[in-house]
Amino acid sequence: MEDAYKPALVYWVSGVDKLGVSETVTTVVDVATPVATIVGECTQTPQAPFASKVRDLYKSGRIALFRHS
Image 1 (cartoon, helix red, strand yellow):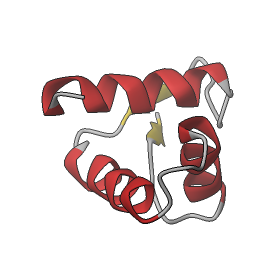
Image 2 (cartoon, one colour):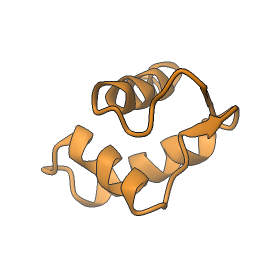
Image 3 (cartoon, helix red, strand yellow):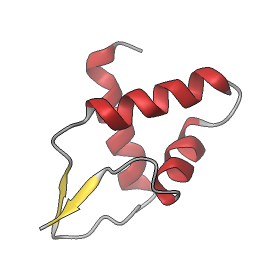
Image 4 (tube, one colour):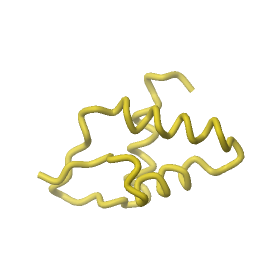
């Protein structure tokens, strides 16, 4: 996937999974860090489902996707 679309895919998965999404949530401005972390993890275990990887990284606190206003 092209780099320009990776942040959108990450945030789409987080919205579908409702990972802390509420009316007062704004997305993190620095998308490069969570995207780079997820790409690195996916490279290590390419057979793992992408959505599961995002969910696990978020719930473990290894990536931050949202900031509560």
